[in-house]
Image: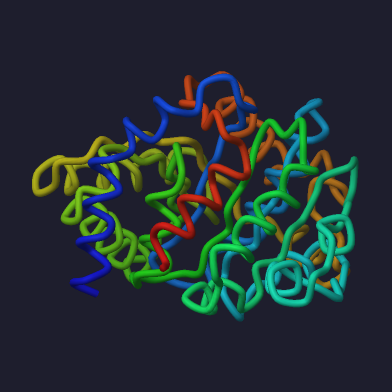
Length: 291
């Protein structure tokens, strides 16, 4: 972890120089969505947010970066045959691996490919990056990471422009989310983050929970937190998961779907920095972090 932390610090120092040499390439907003613990609804949020943005006319790719435990495909009702590993090691084309879902949203499964980065020689990396060039015209890449504090999650956080952390009002969820933000702050990975309070009984609970959470961060940490929104506890979400149909398609007028719509509108209106190298730039950073 200490060695990885040093790499993260080095990447943070070099990030401005990295972006300065990528003028003129594709612009895409890269958002990492993570949580301090599992079971808080992170992947459901990512899938439904991505589809909502796609419905709004944006071109979205979900990168399921939960190594070995990804389930975004299940939530969308798919069972992909291949993942990033197959592109790198089994010579599959990007078109064979990327799944197209509702409204044209794209899904790229990470699988165990990230764990094998040390085995990827320069020729394989160059070939992989070249294949990624076929993914053009993206507006957003949503990276759905694993939960908790580990070098993989921290590495993915360092690769994005925008960090979104999902928590619930439950004390254990808030404690773990705070620990994650504390690690992000300690290693100087990000200076700001957006917070989603999931499964709230009403909007007032969401605001109260965020304010209490932000108060603790303001007192002890040097990181700016913003309340991106709250999402209502909704039985229709449970029904949608069991049916393997995303909530915003199955119950588009439900309370939780409306909340996700409001989050999407906020993201579209926010001033997020753009990665001028698009998805290729993202994976160059991933290679740099995990090698």
